[in-house]
Length: 91
Image 1: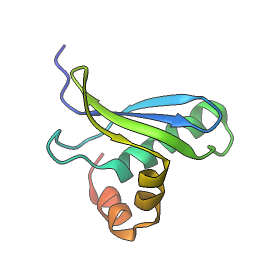
Image 2: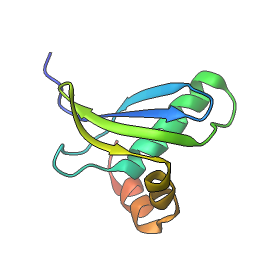
Image 3: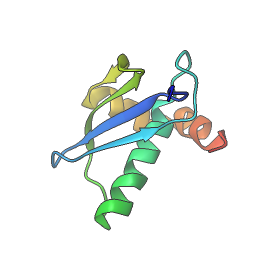
C-alpha cells in the first residue's frame, strides 16, 4: 500500500518513540502538528504525561524529509504561529 501522509517519528527523553501519520504534504511539513499527535499517542499508550521530545523526524516512503533536534523542537513548541497552524488542520 502506498503511503499518502508523512510519518512523524518522535523520540522522548525516556527513550520511547511514537510514529504518527501527519495530515500534511511532504512539501509542506507541519512539525507542530506532529509534536501534538506524538504527545497524544504517548499519553494514550502510557496514561501519563509525556516527557520532552528530544529528537524527531519526518519520513515519507522510507525517505527522511526533515530532522529536528531538541533546540529546533523547543523553538517550534514556543512559537504560537506553529500551534495555530497545527490546530487549524482537519485530522
